[in-house]
Length: 108
Image (tube, rainbow, N blue to C red; front, side):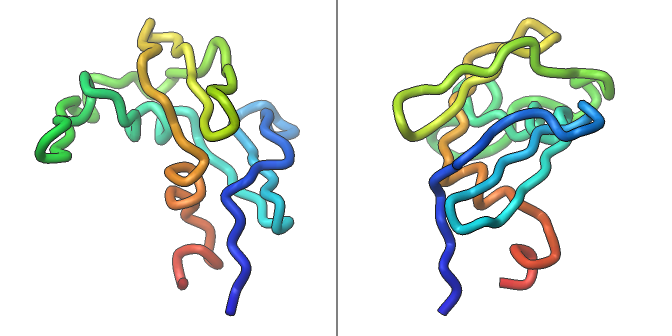
């Protein structure tokens, strides 16, 4: 059985500053591109609360979107203030871990 933690030890920019890196309690590392995170915003303005259908078009999010600020929400999530002025999405640690698209996570 593979241990999979949804508790981050460290959240910050990658060394090159082009992506967000999360080091999880189980020593797994997830790397997310800003635009991918913005497109995955789980707020009610971006996703229909009842159907789960995405309400934003990929073409409406610029390729250069980036977070201006990242804040912790309790002990369970983070919230971004984006360069496109969007700031209502709360990204739970469970969601972020599930979004990891590395080879290890993609195969499990």
